Image: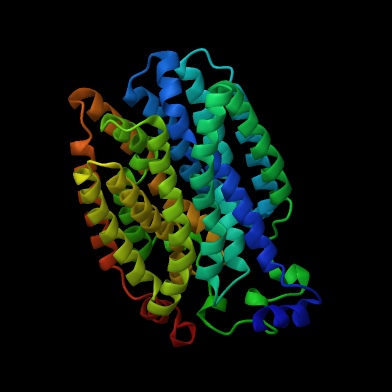
Length: 421
Protein backbone atom coordinates (compact mmCIF):
# COMPACT_ATOMS: atom_id res chain seq x y z
CA UNK A 1 0.00 0.00 0.00
CA UNK A 2 2.87 2.34 0.82
CA UNK A 3 4.41 1.54 -2.56
CA UNK A 4 1.17 2.34 -4.35
CA UNK A 5 0.92 5.65 -2.48
CA UNK A 6 4.49 6.44 -3.47
CA UNK A 7 3.56 5.75 -7.06
CA UNK A 8 0.68 8.21 -6.81
CA UNK A 9 3.04 10.92 -5.50
CA UNK A 10 5.67 10.20 -8.14
CA UNK A 11 3.43 9.85 -11.19
CA UNK A 12 0.43 12.01 -10.33
CA UNK A 13 -1.96 9.05 -10.28
CA UNK A 14 -2.24 5.38 -9.56
CA UNK A 15 0.81 3.22 -10.19
CA UNK A 16 0.29 2.00 -13.75
CA UNK A 17 2.46 -1.07 -13.20
CA UNK A 18 -0.52 -2.92 -11.74
CA UNK A 19 -2.50 -2.16 -14.92
CA UNK A 20 0.37 -3.74 -16.85
CA UNK A 21 0.16 -6.80 -14.60
CA UNK A 22 -3.62 -7.09 -15.13
CA UNK A 23 -3.29 -6.64 -18.91
CA UNK A 24 -0.54 -9.29 -19.06
CA UNK A 25 -2.67 -11.62 -16.90
CA UNK A 26 -5.58 -11.32 -19.36
CA UNK A 27 -3.35 -11.78 -22.40
CA UNK A 28 -1.83 -14.94 -20.96
CA UNK A 29 -5.26 -16.19 -19.82
CA UNK A 30 -6.76 -16.05 -23.32
CA UNK A 31 -3.66 -17.09 -25.26
CA UNK A 32 -2.71 -20.08 -23.14
CA UNK A 33 -6.37 -20.89 -22.56
CA UNK A 34 -6.58 -21.39 -26.32
CA UNK A 35 -3.37 -23.45 -26.29
CA UNK A 36 -4.08 -25.60 -23.23
CA UNK A 37 -7.68 -26.30 -24.17
CA UNK A 38 -6.16 -28.81 -26.60
CA UNK A 39 -6.81 -31.90 -24.40
CA UNK A 40 -10.55 -31.32 -24.85
CA UNK A 41 -10.07 -31.45 -28.63
CA UNK A 42 -7.64 -34.40 -28.63
CA UNK A 43 -10.17 -37.24 -28.92
CA UNK A 44 -12.61 -35.38 -31.24
CA UNK A 45 -9.75 -34.58 -33.63
CA UNK A 46 -8.40 -38.14 -33.43
CA UNK A 47 -11.83 -39.59 -34.16
CA UNK A 48 -12.71 -37.05 -36.86
CA UNK A 49 -9.60 -37.66 -38.94
CA UNK A 50 -8.72 -41.24 -37.94
CA UNK A 51 -5.33 -40.08 -36.64
CA UNK A 52 -2.93 -41.85 -34.28
CA UNK A 53 -2.02 -40.37 -30.90
CA UNK A 54 1.39 -39.44 -32.26
CA UNK A 55 -0.10 -37.60 -35.24
CA UNK A 56 -2.67 -35.82 -33.08
CA UNK A 57 -0.02 -34.86 -30.51
CA UNK A 58 1.93 -33.18 -33.28
CA UNK A 59 -0.79 -30.49 -33.50
CA UNK A 60 0.12 -29.25 -30.03
CA UNK A 61 3.81 -29.88 -30.67
CA UNK A 62 3.81 -27.40 -33.56
CA UNK A 63 1.95 -24.78 -31.54
CA UNK A 64 4.18 -25.21 -28.48
CA UNK A 65 7.33 -25.02 -30.56
CA UNK A 66 6.24 -21.85 -32.31
CA UNK A 67 4.98 -19.91 -29.31
CA UNK A 68 8.19 -20.47 -27.41
CA UNK A 69 10.56 -20.27 -30.39
CA UNK A 70 9.08 -17.03 -31.68
CA UNK A 71 9.78 -15.42 -28.33
CA UNK A 72 13.35 -15.04 -29.61
CA UNK A 73 11.92 -12.60 -32.18
CA UNK A 74 8.82 -11.19 -30.51
CA UNK A 75 10.80 -10.38 -27.34
CA UNK A 76 13.28 -8.06 -29.12
CA UNK A 77 10.41 -6.69 -31.23
CA UNK A 78 8.57 -5.82 -28.02
CA UNK A 79 11.74 -4.22 -26.61
CA UNK A 80 12.23 -2.14 -29.76
CA UNK A 81 8.71 -1.35 -31.01
CA UNK A 82 6.80 -1.67 -27.75
CA UNK A 83 4.71 -4.65 -26.66
CA UNK A 84 1.36 -3.18 -27.70
CA UNK A 85 1.74 -3.64 -31.46
CA UNK A 86 3.26 -7.10 -31.20
CA UNK A 87 0.60 -8.45 -28.82
CA UNK A 88 -2.32 -7.07 -30.86
CA UNK A 89 -0.87 -8.65 -34.01
CA UNK A 90 -0.54 -11.97 -32.17
CA UNK A 91 -4.16 -11.92 -30.97
CA UNK A 92 -5.38 -11.39 -34.54
CA UNK A 93 -3.21 -14.21 -35.92
CA UNK A 94 -4.31 -16.65 -33.18
CA UNK A 95 -7.99 -15.88 -33.82
CA UNK A 96 -7.58 -16.40 -37.58
CA UNK A 97 -5.75 -19.69 -36.96
CA UNK A 98 -8.58 -21.02 -34.81
CA UNK A 99 -11.12 -20.02 -37.47
CA UNK A 100 -9.12 -21.88 -40.11
CA UNK A 101 -8.81 -24.97 -37.89
CA UNK A 102 -12.60 -24.98 -37.52
CA UNK A 103 -12.93 -25.57 -41.29
CA UNK A 104 -10.36 -28.40 -41.51
CA UNK A 105 -11.14 -31.52 -43.53
CA UNK A 106 -7.76 -33.20 -42.85
CA UNK A 107 -5.53 -33.34 -39.78
CA UNK A 108 -2.82 -31.54 -41.76
CA UNK A 109 -5.11 -28.50 -41.98
CA UNK A 110 -5.37 -28.47 -38.18
CA UNK A 111 -1.56 -28.36 -38.15
CA UNK A 112 -1.76 -25.18 -40.21
CA UNK A 113 -4.71 -23.64 -38.39
CA UNK A 114 -4.25 -24.49 -34.74
CA UNK A 115 -0.57 -25.41 -34.85
CA UNK A 116 0.68 -22.50 -36.96
CA UNK A 117 -1.97 -19.89 -36.13
CA UNK A 118 -2.14 -20.39 -32.38
CA UNK A 119 1.61 -21.01 -32.23
CA UNK A 120 2.51 -17.76 -33.99
CA UNK A 121 -0.22 -15.82 -32.18
CA UNK A 122 0.72 -16.93 -28.68
CA UNK A 123 4.39 -16.51 -29.60
CA UNK A 124 3.74 -12.84 -30.33
CA UNK A 125 1.66 -12.34 -27.18
CA UNK A 126 3.57 -14.17 -24.45
CA UNK A 127 7.12 -12.81 -24.20
CA UNK A 128 6.34 -9.12 -24.96
CA UNK A 129 3.64 -9.09 -22.26
CA UNK A 130 5.89 -10.76 -19.67
CA UNK A 131 8.85 -8.60 -20.68
CA UNK A 132 6.80 -5.44 -20.13
CA UNK A 133 6.03 -6.48 -16.55
CA UNK A 134 9.77 -6.80 -15.75
CA UNK A 135 10.38 -3.10 -16.46
CA UNK A 136 7.66 -1.88 -14.12
CA UNK A 137 9.00 -3.70 -11.06
CA UNK A 138 12.37 -4.11 -9.35
CA UNK A 139 12.15 -5.27 -5.74
CA UNK A 140 8.76 -6.90 -6.32
CA UNK A 141 9.53 -8.27 -9.76
CA UNK A 142 9.05 -11.95 -8.87
CA UNK A 143 5.68 -11.24 -7.24
CA UNK A 144 4.48 -9.11 -10.16
CA UNK A 145 5.65 -11.73 -12.69
CA UNK A 146 3.93 -14.44 -10.69
CA UNK A 147 0.64 -12.53 -10.61
CA UNK A 148 0.75 -11.81 -14.34
CA UNK A 149 1.70 -15.35 -15.32
CA UNK A 150 -1.09 -16.68 -13.09
CA UNK A 151 -3.17 -15.96 -16.18
CA UNK A 152 -1.68 -19.10 -17.71
CA UNK A 153 -2.83 -21.15 -14.71
CA UNK A 154 -6.36 -19.73 -14.80
CA UNK A 155 -6.52 -20.39 -18.53
CA UNK A 156 -5.28 -23.95 -18.00
CA UNK A 157 -7.96 -24.51 -15.35
CA UNK A 158 -10.92 -22.88 -17.13
CA UNK A 159 -10.33 -23.53 -20.83
CA UNK A 160 -10.23 -27.37 -20.95
CA UNK A 161 -13.46 -27.69 -18.92
CA UNK A 162 -15.21 -24.94 -20.87
CA UNK A 163 -14.10 -26.41 -24.20
CA UNK A 164 -15.22 -29.91 -23.15
CA UNK A 165 -18.69 -28.63 -22.26
CA UNK A 166 -18.97 -26.58 -25.45
CA UNK A 167 -17.88 -29.52 -27.60
CA UNK A 168 -20.57 -31.63 -25.91
CA UNK A 169 -23.24 -28.98 -26.51
CA UNK A 170 -22.13 -27.90 -29.98
CA UNK A 171 -19.15 -29.55 -31.68
CA UNK A 172 -15.40 -29.00 -31.87
CA UNK A 173 -15.66 -26.75 -34.92
CA UNK A 174 -18.13 -24.31 -33.34
CA UNK A 175 -16.06 -24.35 -30.16
CA UNK A 176 -12.97 -23.27 -32.09
CA UNK A 177 -14.95 -20.36 -33.57
CA UNK A 178 -16.14 -19.23 -30.13
CA UNK A 179 -12.60 -19.50 -28.79
CA UNK A 180 -11.37 -17.36 -31.68
CA UNK A 181 -13.81 -14.60 -30.73
CA UNK A 182 -12.67 -14.60 -27.09
CA UNK A 183 -8.99 -14.44 -28.07
CA UNK A 184 -9.61 -11.60 -30.49
CA UNK A 185 -11.67 -9.38 -28.17
CA UNK A 186 -9.76 -9.88 -24.91
CA UNK A 187 -6.33 -10.16 -26.52
CA UNK A 188 -6.61 -6.93 -28.51
CA UNK A 189 -8.18 -4.82 -25.75
CA UNK A 190 -5.62 -5.97 -23.18
CA UNK A 191 -2.72 -5.55 -25.58
CA UNK A 192 -3.63 -1.91 -26.11
CA UNK A 193 -3.02 -1.25 -22.40
CA UNK A 194 0.64 -2.35 -22.45
CA UNK A 195 3.55 0.08 -22.14
CA UNK A 196 7.26 -0.61 -21.83
CA UNK A 197 8.51 2.39 -19.87
CA UNK A 198 7.43 3.70 -16.44
CA UNK A 199 9.26 6.92 -17.30
CA UNK A 200 6.65 7.74 -19.94
CA UNK A 201 4.13 8.13 -17.15
CA UNK A 202 6.53 9.90 -14.83
CA UNK A 203 6.79 6.85 -12.58
CA UNK A 204 9.49 4.55 -11.23
CA UNK A 205 9.55 0.74 -10.82
CA UNK A 206 7.41 -0.60 -7.94
CA UNK A 207 5.62 2.75 -7.75
CA UNK A 208 8.52 4.16 -5.71
CA UNK A 209 9.02 7.90 -5.27
CA UNK A 210 12.59 7.69 -6.59
CA UNK A 211 14.55 5.52 -8.99
CA UNK A 212 15.74 2.21 -7.47
CA UNK A 213 19.37 2.10 -6.41
CA UNK A 214 19.72 -1.70 -6.24
CA UNK A 215 21.17 -4.07 -8.80
CA UNK A 216 17.77 -4.04 -10.48
CA UNK A 217 18.55 -0.52 -11.73
CA UNK A 218 22.12 -1.39 -12.67
CA UNK A 219 23.69 -2.15 -16.00
CA UNK A 220 21.85 -4.53 -18.29
CA UNK A 221 23.31 -6.91 -20.82
CA UNK A 222 21.93 -7.42 -24.33
CA UNK A 223 21.25 -10.80 -25.89
CA UNK A 224 24.51 -11.00 -27.83
CA UNK A 225 26.60 -10.25 -24.75
CA UNK A 226 24.54 -12.59 -22.56
CA UNK A 227 25.11 -15.46 -24.99
CA UNK A 228 28.84 -15.20 -24.30
CA UNK A 229 28.31 -15.99 -20.61
CA UNK A 230 27.87 -19.29 -18.75
CA UNK A 231 24.66 -18.68 -16.72
CA UNK A 232 22.40 -18.19 -19.73
CA UNK A 233 23.57 -21.47 -21.29
CA UNK A 234 23.03 -23.38 -18.06
CA UNK A 235 19.50 -21.97 -17.90
CA UNK A 236 19.05 -22.73 -21.61
CA UNK A 237 20.07 -26.39 -21.45
CA UNK A 238 18.31 -26.92 -18.13
CA UNK A 239 15.09 -25.60 -19.66
CA UNK A 240 15.58 -27.74 -22.76
CA UNK A 241 15.96 -30.95 -20.77
CA UNK A 242 13.02 -30.24 -18.50
CA UNK A 243 10.75 -29.11 -21.33
CA UNK A 244 10.96 -32.38 -23.26
CA UNK A 245 8.74 -33.95 -20.59
CA UNK A 246 7.15 -30.79 -19.21
CA UNK A 247 4.34 -30.49 -21.78
CA UNK A 248 3.49 -34.17 -21.88
CA UNK A 249 0.70 -33.90 -19.27
CA UNK A 250 -1.05 -31.13 -21.22
CA UNK A 251 -1.65 -33.52 -24.11
CA UNK A 252 -1.46 -37.05 -22.72
CA UNK A 253 -2.91 -36.80 -19.22
CA UNK A 254 -6.52 -37.09 -20.41
CA UNK A 255 -5.91 -40.17 -22.62
CA UNK A 256 -3.75 -41.65 -19.84
CA UNK A 257 -6.70 -41.27 -17.46
CA UNK A 258 -9.08 -42.86 -19.96
CA UNK A 259 -6.66 -45.76 -20.44
CA UNK A 260 -7.08 -46.41 -16.69
CA UNK A 261 -10.85 -46.68 -17.21
CA UNK A 262 -11.80 -43.15 -16.16
CA UNK A 263 -14.38 -41.18 -18.12
CA UNK A 264 -13.60 -38.33 -20.53
CA UNK A 265 -15.10 -35.90 -17.98
CA UNK A 266 -12.81 -37.23 -15.25
CA UNK A 267 -9.87 -36.92 -17.63
CA UNK A 268 -10.71 -33.23 -18.10
CA UNK A 269 -10.88 -32.80 -14.30
CA UNK A 270 -7.34 -34.18 -14.11
CA UNK A 271 -6.11 -31.75 -16.78
CA UNK A 272 -7.83 -28.82 -15.07
CA UNK A 273 -6.21 -29.80 -11.76
CA UNK A 274 -2.94 -28.81 -13.41
CA UNK A 275 -4.43 -25.34 -13.78
CA UNK A 276 -5.33 -25.21 -10.08
CA UNK A 277 -1.78 -26.13 -9.11
CA UNK A 278 -0.40 -23.67 -11.65
CA UNK A 279 -2.33 -20.83 -10.04
CA UNK A 280 -0.97 -21.81 -6.62
CA UNK A 281 2.60 -22.04 -7.91
CA UNK A 282 2.52 -18.65 -9.56
CA UNK A 283 0.94 -16.98 -6.53
CA UNK A 284 3.04 -18.39 -3.71
CA UNK A 285 6.44 -19.18 -5.20
CA UNK A 286 7.21 -15.60 -6.24
CA UNK A 287 7.25 -14.34 -2.63
CA UNK A 288 9.07 -17.50 -1.51
CA UNK A 289 11.76 -16.87 -4.14
CA UNK A 290 12.09 -13.24 -3.05
CA UNK A 291 12.84 -14.46 0.47
CA UNK A 292 15.10 -17.42 -0.25
CA UNK A 293 16.49 -16.56 -3.68
CA UNK A 294 15.23 -17.43 -7.14
CA UNK A 295 18.06 -19.79 -8.08
CA UNK A 296 17.57 -22.18 -5.09
CA UNK A 297 13.80 -22.20 -5.59
CA UNK A 298 14.12 -23.00 -9.31
CA UNK A 299 16.52 -25.82 -8.41
CA UNK A 300 13.92 -27.20 -6.00
CA UNK A 301 11.25 -26.98 -8.69
CA UNK A 302 13.29 -29.08 -11.13
CA UNK A 303 13.95 -31.73 -8.49
CA UNK A 304 10.26 -31.71 -7.59
CA UNK A 305 9.29 -32.20 -11.24
CA UNK A 306 11.50 -35.29 -11.46
CA UNK A 307 9.86 -36.73 -8.35
CA UNK A 308 6.28 -36.00 -9.43
CA UNK A 309 6.86 -37.65 -12.82
CA UNK A 310 7.80 -40.80 -10.95
CA UNK A 311 4.54 -40.46 -9.01
CA UNK A 312 2.66 -40.14 -12.33
CA UNK A 313 4.28 -43.39 -13.47
CA UNK A 314 2.93 -45.08 -10.32
CA UNK A 315 -0.58 -43.55 -10.53
CA UNK A 316 -3.48 -45.97 -10.93
CA UNK A 317 -6.54 -44.04 -9.69
CA UNK A 318 -8.39 -40.75 -10.05
CA UNK A 319 -7.20 -39.32 -6.72
CA UNK A 320 -3.57 -40.11 -7.58
CA UNK A 321 -3.90 -38.35 -10.93
CA UNK A 322 -5.61 -35.35 -9.31
CA UNK A 323 -2.77 -35.16 -6.79
CA UNK A 324 -0.25 -35.40 -9.60
CA UNK A 325 -2.05 -32.66 -11.53
CA UNK A 326 -2.09 -30.20 -8.62
CA UNK A 327 1.54 -30.80 -7.63
CA UNK A 328 2.79 -30.83 -11.21
CA UNK A 329 0.86 -27.62 -11.92
CA UNK A 330 2.36 -25.94 -8.85
CA UNK A 331 5.89 -26.84 -9.93
CA UNK A 332 5.28 -25.96 -13.58
CA UNK A 333 3.65 -22.67 -12.58
CA UNK A 334 6.61 -21.73 -10.43
CA UNK A 335 9.04 -22.61 -13.23
CA UNK A 336 7.28 -20.36 -15.74
CA UNK A 337 6.76 -17.52 -13.25
CA UNK A 338 10.34 -17.43 -11.97
CA UNK A 339 12.23 -17.85 -15.25
CA UNK A 340 11.95 -14.15 -16.29
CA UNK A 341 12.94 -12.89 -12.83
CA UNK A 342 15.84 -15.36 -12.58
CA UNK A 343 17.26 -14.13 -15.88
CA UNK A 344 16.80 -10.52 -14.79
CA UNK A 345 18.84 -11.30 -11.65
CA UNK A 346 21.82 -11.98 -13.91
CA UNK A 347 21.31 -9.72 -16.91
CA UNK A 348 19.13 -6.81 -15.79
CA UNK A 349 15.88 -5.68 -17.40
CA UNK A 350 17.01 -3.46 -20.29
CA UNK A 351 16.77 -6.36 -22.76
CA UNK A 352 14.44 -8.60 -20.76
CA UNK A 353 12.22 -9.55 -23.69
CA UNK A 354 15.08 -10.52 -25.96
CA UNK A 355 16.92 -12.58 -23.34
CA UNK A 356 13.74 -14.33 -22.23
CA UNK A 357 12.86 -15.05 -25.84
CA UNK A 358 16.28 -16.61 -26.47
CA UNK A 359 15.98 -18.92 -23.47
CA UNK A 360 12.42 -19.85 -24.39
CA UNK A 361 13.66 -21.11 -27.75
CA UNK A 362 15.01 -24.07 -25.77
CA UNK A 363 11.55 -24.68 -24.33
CA UNK A 364 10.24 -24.58 -27.90
CA UNK A 365 12.41 -27.53 -28.90
CA UNK A 366 11.21 -29.51 -25.89
CA UNK A 367 7.57 -28.73 -26.67
CA UNK A 368 8.01 -29.77 -30.30
CA UNK A 369 9.67 -33.13 -29.76
CA UNK A 370 8.42 -34.28 -26.34
CA UNK A 371 4.71 -34.74 -26.98
CA UNK A 372 4.88 -36.37 -30.43
CA UNK A 373 7.62 -38.75 -29.25
CA UNK A 374 5.48 -39.70 -26.25
CA UNK A 375 2.52 -40.25 -28.57
CA UNK A 376 4.49 -42.41 -31.00
CA UNK A 377 5.99 -44.39 -28.11
CA UNK A 378 2.45 -45.06 -26.92
CA UNK A 379 1.36 -46.08 -30.43
CA UNK A 380 4.25 -48.58 -30.53
CA UNK A 381 3.97 -50.04 -27.02
CA UNK A 382 0.40 -49.12 -25.94
CA UNK A 383 1.77 -47.65 -22.69
CA UNK A 384 3.12 -44.30 -21.46
CA UNK A 385 5.59 -45.90 -19.03
CA UNK A 386 8.80 -45.18 -20.94
CA UNK A 387 8.10 -41.54 -21.91
CA UNK A 388 7.07 -40.69 -18.33
CA UNK A 389 10.26 -42.17 -16.89
CA UNK A 390 12.34 -40.40 -19.53
CA UNK A 391 10.65 -37.15 -18.52
CA UNK A 392 11.59 -37.76 -14.88
CA UNK A 393 15.22 -38.39 -15.75
CA UNK A 394 15.48 -35.28 -17.91
CA UNK A 395 14.05 -33.10 -15.13
CA UNK A 396 16.75 -34.46 -12.83
CA UNK A 397 19.42 -33.62 -15.43
CA UNK A 398 17.98 -30.10 -15.73
CA UNK A 399 18.36 -29.67 -11.98
CA UNK A 400 22.10 -30.32 -12.33
CA UNK A 401 22.34 -27.41 -14.77
CA UNK A 402 20.73 -25.04 -12.25
CA UNK A 403 22.94 -26.39 -9.46
CA UNK A 404 26.02 -25.49 -11.52
CA UNK A 405 24.98 -21.83 -11.87
CA UNK A 406 26.91 -19.20 -9.88
CA UNK A 407 25.17 -16.94 -7.37
CA UNK A 408 23.51 -14.04 -9.27
CA UNK A 409 24.79 -11.39 -6.85
CA UNK A 410 28.38 -12.66 -6.91
CA UNK A 411 28.31 -13.12 -10.68
CA UNK A 412 27.08 -9.55 -11.23
CA UNK A 413 29.66 -8.21 -8.79
CA UNK A 414 32.46 -9.93 -10.74
CA UNK A 415 31.00 -8.92 -14.09
CA UNK A 416 30.01 -5.32 -13.45
CA UNK A 417 31.79 -4.38 -10.23
CA UNK A 418 30.82 -4.31 -6.56
CA UNK A 419 28.38 -1.44 -7.05
CA UNK A 420 26.21 -3.67 -9.16
CA UNK A 421 25.74 -6.37 -6.58
